[in-house]
View (cartoon, helix red, strand yellow):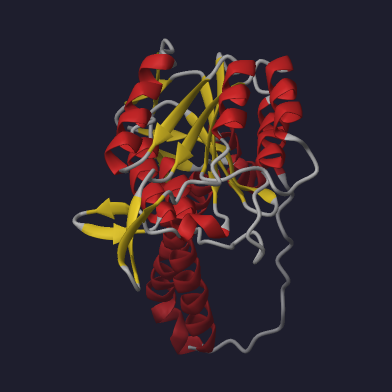
Length: 330
């Protein structure tokens, strides 16, 4: 359907008529003229022709005025109502982008990939399924910074997550878990959501930052923020050496004790993701752990149509102006 955003503007439509009949008429100047006798025979013909020539520009000008007023009233096209589900949940994701995340101990589509690539793949699917949630993204390494504020625009969050790369925060191989939690608390503590959740994913231990992880966890608990921690990385890998293959633990630096303590202090939960399948399972469990009743809201897509009557009004005005100039020259 079509509606007018400013319907009261239509009240100015009769203004030209009011000016025409209420304002005093302009005095006609009488000038001396040479009277030619034989032109009296053509006076009736000339008066009719002049009257017609003056009439149609006035009609076009009136149409242009109506179109101009209509454009000022901002006509809009409203589409069909679209249902939008609002969950009332604010969800912040904090992803480790430190140097250790380039360890290639994950398999994706039969190929070995680094931890960050696997995280992007699984987390992107998780974000796309968060209909009704406001989602934000924090990246942390040596420092922590807000990559995306809380938003319903899941596509933008996914794009910015996929643009992240190892070392984006700093070249130094350090991890600031405490600062990431503190930054999440800063952006979630004043929201009015029914549920406020932080999902923190890391493969190391806190080696940088101004805030200790457990101090940040206590701050999160004080503000009702629940933290789910995910320790990522394989437990065992085979590597070649001069004496054949040897086994080693690529996740030796993972501080599971602290991650468990963070989750416990905030009434969250700690998960261990050793491969892509376990990481996918963790994200599926998060929906079961944080059920939120969703409200249905409707909105109607809207597009402005004012440019069509405006363009036509300008076209008619230009045509009338050119015609009047031609009439004067002739």
